[in-house]
Each structure stands twice: as C-alpha cells, then as structure tokens.
Amino acid sequence: MGKLTVATCPKCREVLLGIDLSKMFSSNNPEKGLQILKSIVTETPCDPTVHYNIGLVYSKLHRYEEAIESYKKAIDYNTEIPEVYLYLGIAYGYLGKYEDSISALEKAKQLIPNDEKILCSLAIEYCKSGKLEEGIVIFKDALKINPNNTSILGCLGEAYYEAGNDKDAIIVYKQIVEREPNNAKAHYSLGVSYISVHNLESAREEYDILKNIDEDLAKDLIDNIEPKEIGLKLSRQLKESIESIPGLLSIIENEGKGMVSLKDIDKKKLIRELTILTYVGRRLAIQLMQKKGGGRDENKRREICNSLDNYSSQFLENSPEFNDLVDQRGEQYFQLLQSHNEGISNGDWKKFFEALQFKFEQFCLGGGDEEDRIIILGRFTSTMPLMMLANQYWSDGFIETVKLLKTQEPL
Image 1 (tube, rainbow, N blue to C red):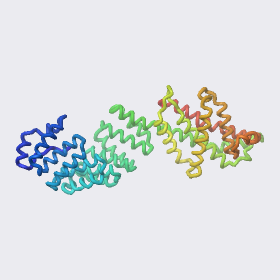
Image 2: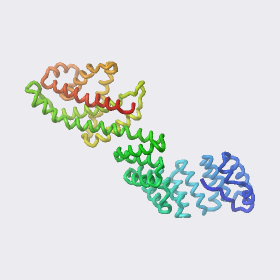
Image 3: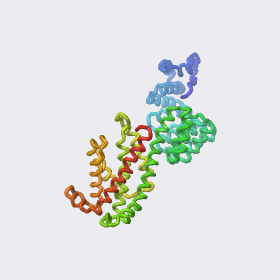
Image 4: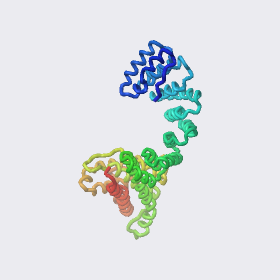
C-alpha cells in the first residue's frame, strides 16, 4: 500500500502537517482518516496529492471503484505522478479490469522505468490477464534490479508453473529454498512442480521437509502426492495385465489339449475387450470405494482416476473408436455392478461374476440379446476360456485395486 504524502498546496500542507497520517492510515479506523481527507479536499479540490491519499484509504477499505475515481481526479491535476498510476493499476486489477490495470501500470513504468514494485505489479497483472509470457519477461526485468528478492522469484516460479513450464519453475523454487530453507510456500510449490513432471520421489522429499515447517501445507501437499502414487501403481499393474494377455491366450490354446478353443474368437477384439475390462475394473473400484462409516471423498477418488488415466494414456490405444468403446463399456459394467450392489455389499460376488462373464461373452462373440444366452453358452469350447478370462481380469482390475486402496489412507 502506498505511503501517504504531504499535499503540494500550502494551505493543505499546513493542515496535514499537524496530523500523523501514517499512524492514522495504519490504524484500525481508516474511516476517520477518510473523513479528515474529505474535509481537506473540499477546501482545496485541485491538489492531486490529497485525491491520491483519499484513493489509498479507499483501497485500504477495499472500495476500489471509489479509489479509482480518486486516483483519476489526482491525474486530472497532475499527469506525472507514477505512484498514482501504480495504485490505479492495482485497484483496476482487484476488480478484474486487467486491460485498464495494465494500461495504468505501463504509464507508471514509463515515468519510472526501473522501479521494482511497478515492474512486479505490472507482471502480476499480465499473468492474471492470461498473458503469462509477457509477465515472465517483466518478472525477469524486476529481478535484474534486485536479484535477491525471493518474493519476485516466487512470482516468477508461479508464472512458469501456470505456463506449463514445470522445469523452469523447479529451477526457480530450488533457488528460493537454497536461500530460505524454511520458506514453506516455496517447498510446497516445488513439491507441486515435481508432481507435474511425475517426479513423485522428489515431491515426497519436499513433503518430508515441509511437515516440519508448516503442517497444513504439508497435509495439502501429501493429499496431492498420494493420488498420483496410487494412480501410478495402478497403471503399472494395468500395463502388466495388458502385456500378459497374448501369452495367456497362447497357454489356453496350446495347453487346452482340445478341451478348450478360441478358434471362433476374433483375437484382436478379445484383447481389446480384455484391456477395457481390466481398465474399467480399476476405475470402478476407485469410484466405488468408501471410507469407514460410509463417507465418500469424491475429490480424492476423482484425482486418483485422473492420475490413472494420465499414466495409462502412455500405453493404452489412443483412438476415438477405443475411447468411445471405453466410455460405453464403463457405463455398461457400472450398471451391472450397481444392479448387484446388494449382494456385493453382503460379500456375495457369485451372481455378479456370472452376469459379468455373460456380458463379457456377449461383447466378444457379438451376442446382444438375452435370448442368445443359451446359444452362446452352448459353445462350450469357446465360452469357457472367456469365462476364465473375464473372471481373472476383473479380479485383477477390481478386487486387487480395492486391496491396494485399503492399504492407503482411507478415501
């Protein structure tokens, strides 16, 4: 906040010199100061400094529209006071009027090109307006004036992070914690940046440091780390399951000794359906997990699902057809699970697995109607391995995921 200055008008100066404005301004009663300044301005309405001081008090009171009017009046009487443009720009920024804010701050910069506070305020407004690259450039200019200002470094790191430049954000936050080892916000931001580049081990290290500095920020950081760790572990299990499918199919065909056969099955389609089955199983397990007492944490489950999706996208098929099929199957399996919810809640999975296997057979063999069930199940040599596979991959995808989640913090 700006420092109250003495008016340029001799009469105003005489009045103001008898008042401890700085004390009045920093007190818990800025309204009193506003009354005094208003009484002064009625006697000398053309003094820009009084209007500027009134604007500062309005800003202190978060009455930014009125503050802006006062700053504008100050400019009407003197267009060359950089502090007026500075706080005019800041007031516009609080109202979300970023173009006006940037315009005022650019004028302040013209009047004092190398003022650290003006540059930093201008960079912040550029970033708030979505012009991150412009903001980054100006933050760097401010650091040339004062390279040791860790507050500006922190703003630069945040701008890098928001721009998706996580590597440079990490470099900046590392510089801050080297200079200020107990800077909790910097450790937190460094941890979050590590998460963005999937370096969860380093993020954990920042958590270990942070929990001895700021417990609240540490808790928030670990709440961001754990869903990513779970998602990463689940995606690794998913990848192993998917990679095992062709080998398992070969075992079924080669060691079945004529008792089982997949000759009537489209292998490509079967592998795709098995991939979806285990992937959807993992997602549903996450979505349906409940903490003790029946409470649910939607945000954490959503974060784990997002993390699983993010890591899995690196090896899952990426095509509109596959993505549409995943959504379709996800809804179908979810409805199936919901329809057997009562039995599952009581620990009885048998009927659900029977229904699941039948549904899976329909997807693989092309059956779509309930009437086809007898015909499909009659093709014993083809359907038996499908039943085995559906059971195995659902168990891997759903039940194993439930076990993993139960070993973590309750969702």
